[in-house]
Image (spheres, rainbow, N blue to C red):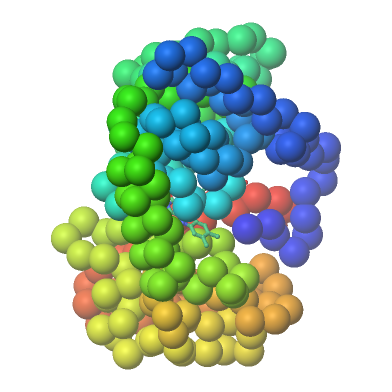
Length: 232
Ligand SMILES: Cc1cc2nc3c(=O)[nH]c(=O)nc-3n(C[C@H](O)[C@H](O)[C@H](O)COP(=O)(O)OP(=O)(O)OC[C@H]3O[C@@H](n4cnc5c(N)ncnc54)[C@H](O)[C@@H]3O)c2cc1C
């Protein structure tokens, strides 16, 4: 989420301008600006398995690597072989998976302000029909359970140890809870959605209110998964 005051500075968007994909056996080399969904589809076309679970995560490969994004039991750390990065001083770094300090929605990218430039995914050959069946299954689960037609930043909170954010929010009676344009999704309580023109300030207040109700009622402290950028 970007604050209402925005970003005072130059923003480099690593996107379609930097989205090359190439294949070397079962190694898929992808530039950071490529959509994770496009990289996944490319792998399926080449009968490679491993990305079916994560194929529906919106965003770029760079963002996914930085966040160690994951879904349905598979995270970037399970399928990445190595990553090429750029340091703050402009140095090109090549890190193997084990050097990336991947953990739940975290990598060393954030500790050291690195820029992901390219990732190599290590996948396996498999039967293409089986791959597409798996892909369809995960796509269907996402479409039926998540409010993909609404504006959101995805799951607002990280999964707390010992429970699930969506379950806790639901148990607190907050399904569909609304304040102005901010709302807890009726479809999936883990998604706090913007129904219209809610500002950053309104959304962040709403997020904090939901977290504080959950803490008061259950004792679980919900930590934001959504990153905030910009001037406060
Ligand atoms: C509907 C919906 C569903 C979602 N489902 C999931 C899910 O199932 N699992 C999941 O993990 N996430 C999910 N997300 C969250 C989000 O899609 C992922 O975190 C995604 O990987 C972010 O990629 P992005 O390119 O959009 O990064 P951004 O959101 O733009 O950035 C995320 C962070 O990564 C940093 N970053 C981005 N690119 C780079 C780069 N090249 N180098 C260094 N740092 C970089 C940014 O500075 C920022 O701090 C969902 C979001 C939505 C809206």
